[in-house]
Length: 116
Length: 113
Image (cartoon, rainbow over all chains, first blue to last red):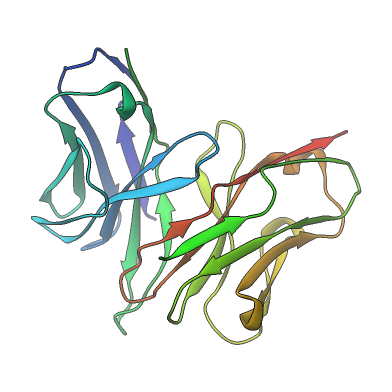
């Protein structure tokens, strides 16, 4: 069965420090991968998605970047954190059907980031 | 612009009461529709989904949702809620060719025992 891991689970970082959040998926090949940020009362906002190694699409302009160095690894980074980067970050994956269609997404446990 | 609107931000019900959470979307093409649920301390998980066919779809734990294309709505219902249904509920829509989803802002459901 497929599983998705995220770490760390929680993180407290000072403003201006770098960030690296990691997401890995097991039990599937060539998944689509996604990074979301969840803010209280504001739902989930798609930040990045990737259809393959080295292929990243950014959905919103921001202080963050993403990379996919391996098929099942997705990394969210920042060179200098801002207070506004605080939030709950979720990684997700989805399967591409033989028809090319993509359906539901499966979410990881998330990382709670507090920037102080 | 594509958007999803959930009508209720916070709903409080007593056990055995009926539930309906509203969801309306704005999207120009064919969409897949989802309801996700996040129980306290747990992962976001899929409650139910609609891709095509019967517009009334049934999900886990007695939930169902009806897709009304003319109203761009996908409301979630449950005839009788339980205390264990206390959670945050998210409606999401997206095209099937990218898998990208647009989420509503979420509805927090509190069920009183």
